[in-house]
Length: 250
Image (cartoon, rainbow, N blue to C red):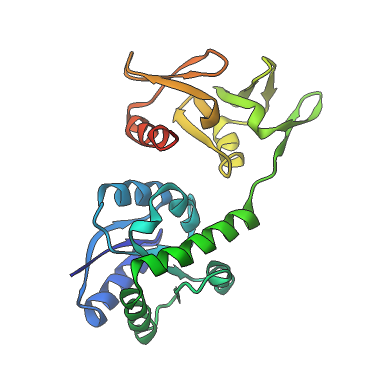
């Protein structure tokens, strides 16, 4: 029995794919479904024995590629799904990977599953590695970011940002040289701006650059110590994921 996970932000799309798999691919057993990047990452990490991932490319909180960046994508095979042909073509541009264009055709689904099952995991991993390398190269974020304040626009290297703190409808940006800027943007706005970089929202009031996290300490429910000496609380719901991320950086 092949264990599969379905990832799509549209419940109806997941339901349709589940029905098609039941009808045309009885050897597939669905062991989980996810509707967002965060849900998918958490589910994949918990299901260590997943064999096949049906991955929607465009999700409400990011892309399927964001999921692949955060999990061990070499432990399973992936079939991309999308409603947009341009996204599909982007997914397979650099490597011979399979995709399904919605609405999913039964014959194409069966063919994609057969191809995935017939491909050795090592061969599939080689294809995925080639694709991910090209994808990262094509979508690598800029080294600098423009930050608008009341007195003008300031250009800074993203790596120089240590952390960001919420000040209501404003956000304070802290830099490694000790300087700081007050922006007329919410922390949520800045989280979206920095989504392609190595920043993590660890608390409702704090967004941190993972490259500037020096340690995690088990006190007051969990805290991180930043390179500028700041000690910041970690929300309980973020603790497990943050520990996994930090553990994988060693």
